Every structure is written in C-alpha cells, then in structure tokens.
Amino acid sequence: MAQKEYLKKVILKKQINTVDFLHFLSVKQKKEMLELAYALRGKRVVHVNATEKGGGVAEILKSLIPYLRSLGLQSDWYCFNPMLDKKFFYITNKIHNALQGSLIKIKYEEWTEYERVSKSVAMELDTIDYDILVIHDPQPLLAGAYCKLNKKKIFFSHIDTSEASDMAWKRIFSIANSYDRIVFSNRNFVHNHFAAGKIKVFTPAIDPLSPKQQIVSKKEARFYLKKYSGIAQHVPLIAQISRFDEWKNPMGVIKAFNIIKNTYQKALLMLVGFKEASDNPLAQKCYESIMAVAGNSPEIYIFFNPKGKNILEFTTMAQNAADIVVQNSIKEGFGLTVTEAMWKGHPVIGGPASGIRKQIKNGKNGFIAENPDELAQKMIFLLSHPKKKKKMGNEAKKTVQKKFLFPRLVLDHLKLYKSCLK
Image 1 (cartoon, rainbow, N blue to C red):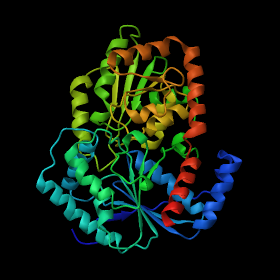
Image 2: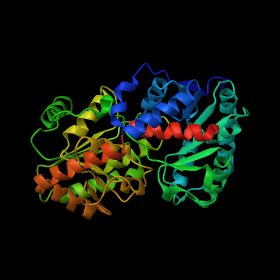
Image 3: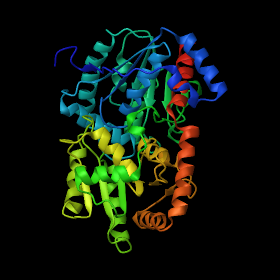
Image 4: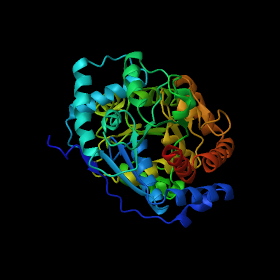
C-alpha cells in the first residue's frame, strides 16, 4: 500500500458553541474550563484511533473534536483507512483480546506485521502538524511510538487490562511507557510498572447534545420498532444494544431470556449489534454463533447487517423502547451503552465487568448480575415492580447527570493537555 493511504482524516461538519454546554458544569468547573481554554488557545491536538464508525471511542471522538474546536483548540481526528489489509485488523483484534485476558498466542510473524504497518502509519503521522498527539487503544499505539517528531504524546487505554496476558502486556507496556501520559478509565486497570506521574484516570462520558442521546416517549419508540422491524408494541421487550463480541456475552443474555419466558411468555428479546467497525473482524463469527443458537426463535430479534437501517436512529429508538436494558459484559473498559441507557431513565442490568461497576450501584440505580440465572431474576424483578423500576431509573439518570456527561470529560482533557505541555 502506498504512503498516505494508511490514515484517513475524519471530516466533521458539526459545530457547537460554548453556550450550548457550559450550563452542564458547576460555576467552579466553568471558570476552570474557560481559563484552560484560554491558556491552550491555538494549540493543535490530533487524535488517532482505529475506526470512524462503531464502538465507544469513535462515539467519543465524534463529539470531542467539535467541543475542543469551540474552545479555541485546533483539533483533528484521523483513523485507519478502512481499506487497510484485513490481516492487520485481525492481528490487532488478537492483541486487544490478549490484553483483556484471552489466552491466545500472538505469533512472531503477526507482531512483525503489526510493526511493519505501524512504521508506515508513523511516517504519515510525521507529516501532520500537531502539539499533542493522542493515540487511542492498541491498534495505533505502536505507530504513535514510532513517530519521530519531538512532540508530546498521550495514550488512552479504553479496555480492561486488569488481567492482560503476560506476554502481550510486556510488549505493550514498553510501547505505552514511551508516551508522556497514559490514561485509563478505571484505576483497577493500571499496572504498577508505570511511573506515577505519567498516569491519569478518568472515565468516558456521553454527549448530551448528540442526537443519539435524544429522549423520546416509549410509545413513539415502540411504534418505530413495530414499523421498521415488526416488533410487537405491547409486550415486554428486553434489549442488549452493543456490538457482537464474546466479551459482551450475548449468549448469557439468551440463556437468561429463555428462563424468564416461563414467567413472561410474551416477552421479546432484541440483540442490536450492527456491524460498523472495521477493526473487529471477529464480530461476524460471534453473530454466526448467536444465529446458530437463536436464529430460528420468533421471540428473538437479531440486528447485525446495517443495510436499509438508519443505525443512529434505530439504536436511539431501541434504547428508548426497551422495558429492560441489559449490558451483560464480562470485560468492559467502561461501557458507554450503559451510560446511554441510564441517561434515558433505564436501571440497566450489567454483567460482572469492572467498567460497568463504575456506573451501576447494585440495587440503587441498576443491578449487577454474575450469571444467567441472576440476570433472569433481575429481569423478572424489574418487570414485576414498575414503581421500583421507575425510581431506580430516575437514580440512573441522576448518576449520569452528575458524573458522566461530556462537558466534564472535556474539562478532564483540557487539564491533561495542560499538564502534558508543562
């Protein structure tokens, strides 16, 4: 592949004004944000991740860049060219899974290919002007380390590395350690080997100005699903809305759903995991496994092929329409799908993943379920106690409003950039 083809600049037309979001901050936070923005005015910040579509990182960057620009920073976003050899994404997917604890071996020739592509990506990055380079997750990590420009570099690890395989972690640690700052979403994911001054910990957040966070009536949302997918309007609807991935454990959701059918015979399940991201080639395999188990069940609706669907609109309506929202993840760096559902007033039932526990306070604003039996019990409880469900949903929304909205995340970024440039 010729030079200049490894990276793609993501063009964002969205523009916002500071008045649109400053009211989400406290007086103290607002003052701090404006002071930092003044100090950083004109600085160039370039973000690089794997893909423009699909996954929480792309969601964050889609909003973050316009926020930064509104505050006077010159900010751009680059991702890998989706036409890049699928072999590279297969390798980085293996690295990703190894860092989350999968017992898989990454071959010598696979590390060699990762290095080869990363060197070419680095050559392109060296032609881009920036004061700070921000790299997201393992896919572009080595490329950022290879960059020869003597500029500040930040690495964001958005995944759960608490049980990373030793072999993969040894390689990734030496690469990440070359960065000026390393950011984790959870202190439990931080390894002791890093120098304390390099480490920052702050959680992701959702953008209240994004169309995806729109809150519509359940009646309107159910009518939409009936019209576009044939899902009955007046029966209990369970939903898990996240990409198809073994770590999201959709099989466990299906097992739990089959249990609750004994109590709620008319209940339906929808698994929404549209294939958008080019960096997750194993999604197809996960989808095929789901179809083999549940593809013939009339009570289970599976959404994977995005053809003919407005993905943003459909996902938003699905989150608003569901009676119960589940995120049954075994591993999760944070889980923005949980945040999105909580913002829409759902007490989410989450799996045992550490990232999800950062959001859900078990029994107060949602539930944590360790296995399919427990997941089924929590589903039945919420369906059987509508008043309790509504109260917990209100608490869920308050939690997001207080801790997980985007203006707070932008403030965290500004503090990070300032500390890095010192």
